[in-house]
Amino acid sequence: MTHRMVRALGGVAVALLISGTAAACGGGGGGGTTTAKDCGYKIAYFGALTGSSANLGINIRNGAVLALEQYNAKHTDCTVELKQYDSEGDPAKAPGLARQLVSDNKILGVVGPPFSGESEAADPIFNEAGVTTITPSATRPSLSTKGWKVFHRAVANDDSQGPAAGNYIKTVMKAQKVFVADDQSSYGSGLADNVKKVLGSLVVGTDKVGADGKQTDFSSTVTKVKSSGATVLFYGGYYQNAGLIAKQLKGAGATVTMVAGDGVNDAGFIKAAGNDAAEGTILACPCAPAAQAKGSFLTDYKAKYNAAPGTYGDVGYDVANMFLQGIDKGNTTLAKMLTYINGIQYEGVANTYKFTDKGELDSSLIIVWTFKVTGGQVVPDQATPKG
Image 1 (tube, rainbow, N blue to C red):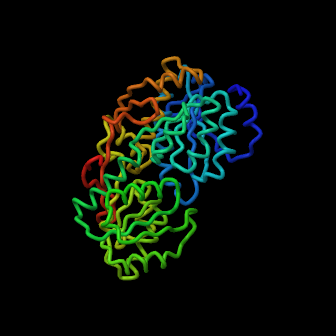
Image 2: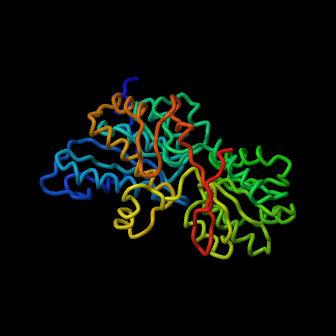
Image 3: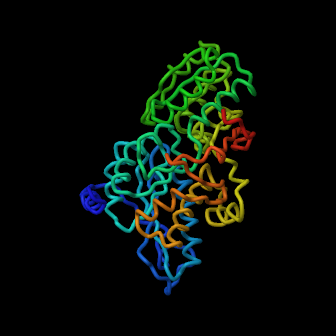
């Protein structure tokens, strides 16, 4: 099926589309004036803007919006629009929304999707249409094994993040008894499985919780953790559930330290848990601290949003700029953009980016850090081994 046909058929889908906030011609792009010229080129953000795990998606979207505004301020002769598609991070909603995206034949690349489950649902549609994607945060390793030619990942996958978290528990925390739980999502279960491989016999119990982010009572898991005698709980999943689990563990008098992955590395975790319950939590992330971002990114982000960038905000900024650089160099067809991104070596604010033939970040460029909740804030802890 041709790309044009796929895009035309995709227009039948009914899905939520949020109009681009970085529209060209003075409609929201920084520096837009009455003389700005919209050349008709677009990139898209596809991912959660609402829903139980929206914060991570919003961080990425905010970085992309900043990139668009800065680009358009310098390219008033030919501005680019950012279209935003709110998937709510829901794999069931992602396909219809993806079909709507590919029906817009001006979209040359996708920033996202942020989550692994929605990536599994939407990426086949992007691949069939030939629309290049770069995810700033979907870390399930199997995403790069599907044969999707358009797929690219701007961070390390869970084969690096999971072992790093496991090694931290074993060598830094020196835990002898660890309980492992996950939310059954593509991301959470995969990350937990990687941690269990590293810890082996140190794992004294496991559990599964609700995968939809709607569960609020975790008393069963709390009871299992307490009875196991574990001193560490590794949780594979996202921040809302993790926060409630930490809060309920604290309320039950459990003396256990939570360790989790990048899906929990968000201020929303602390809000859900409360400062006391969140204190001391260790969070692994295939990312460097945003405070280490190069150039003026940190200052520019704070000036725009009156807040420090959240997890992957700097990576979202870099991903958007890769597409914008491609447009600026004349890669204004789907085929040309894909070829350009496949061969890119881009020096961004968060990292340097170069992709393998499967779309993975080159192994020499992998970054994994741990962060720690201290005094109600997520602060950098240390760079960790890759596993």
